[in-house]
Image (tube, rainbow, N blue to C red; front, side):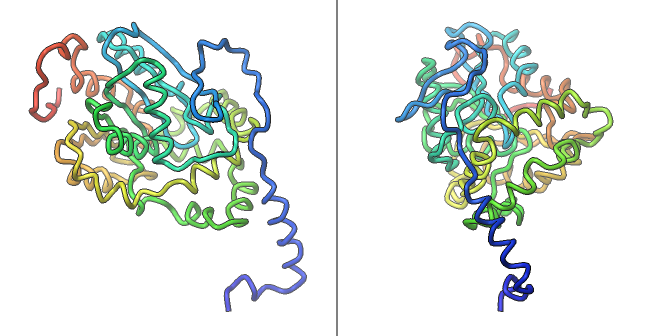
Length: 324
């Protein structure tokens, strides 16, 4: 008999009502005021959804598109965008559907579909081809983009990738079960955001402050945020994509924290073996968010890998990336 049915009947009724209540977890139902202008958003899809974007540099320059991780937002890339703007690039980041200030309406949040939406955002901004810089779960979106729209991707940079089915932890697997997922997210997703954020760093005392935690709490309280986060978790289906990683020929730089407890370094080594033109660099004293914890090194490696934007006017060099 399943464990669930071994509990006393007096506990089953309250649990039933918890499941029923959580099953009503709402998506966004109407437009949300952000105080931003229309130029800070693009509209995609049918029906139309607003996606928050961040831009630096001249739109006529070679483009770099930035893809954030699960529960994050495009603003995490702003320091790196500034560095790469100085190298002559046009930089475009976004709040992926369901996160940040982008819409959180009911709909398709499958990883492959979100990759298609990134391609649509690129098209809306007039970007035919770009280098893609990604973090964590955003790396699975990026690899899906490269598989589904290979001509749109020039080169790839992955920071602490979350790209394999084996990385999906049990609580996320349980969340795929109707009712159970709603209960888990309703009860736990917004709990102790400071502790969860701190677990992403090798040195949390240096990296975590109350201002950041307050911003995280603000994001978690936005209309539809909980329902969208659950929908994205349920859309993490990597099995088909990971079988095809070996077919990707894009030059790829992999940056991984040696002390990453979220996306273990083992998966960086596995991805380096799967991608034909990839190079892995492990960063010491670094956890799951390299571009925040070791920004100098990350900026240096990425800028060296991509080179100045003017070089793109010359024939591409097929040789693997070199460490600076």
